[in-house]
Length: 207
Image 1 (cartoon, rainbow, N blue to C red):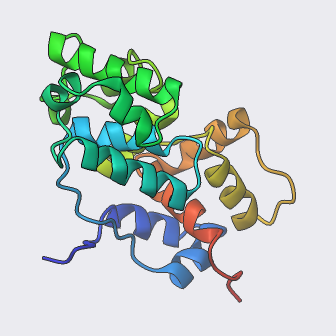
Image 2 (cartoon, rainbow, N blue to C red; image 1 turned 30 degrees about the vertical axis):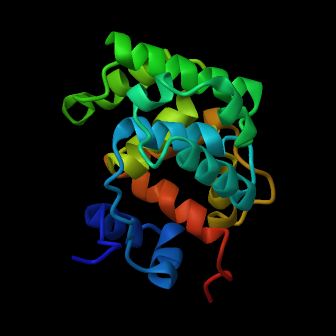
């Protein structure tokens, strides 16, 4: 199996027929996402580590956290690890508090992570955002890139807003409200639209 299999192929076809997205779809090509076998808890710990940090710094801190936990990023391992080595890995006080809250709510059963595949997008967002430090955006990234849900539309994401503006030849980014309305045309494939918005920031304008 490819390490980056094609996903949301219906979205690629739909967007390929769109007058604005079409040239970009042809230039960028098939939507491919890496295979992620990491458990939901470990994925969310990683997401917390990455919040508001550049890629290199985030990868370094996350790698140190994994090392402190002996390679096992589980609620039980986090619960059994003192604060000091986790702070020493580079976690801020807020991020450590968020990981502790995620751990406590997972172990208590208040936030179940073992049945997320069977839940609706709305239920998953509602459940994850009970955790300190996990907002709607983080929950949406979990939906898109861990569960590969096809119709997620992160209108508050600056990358999506900037990509949308570039695809549509606009100087100003749309507001979240404007983007919410514009995305209706791309149901049930708004995750594909968001993905192409991200990629549009990385390539030259199609001829």
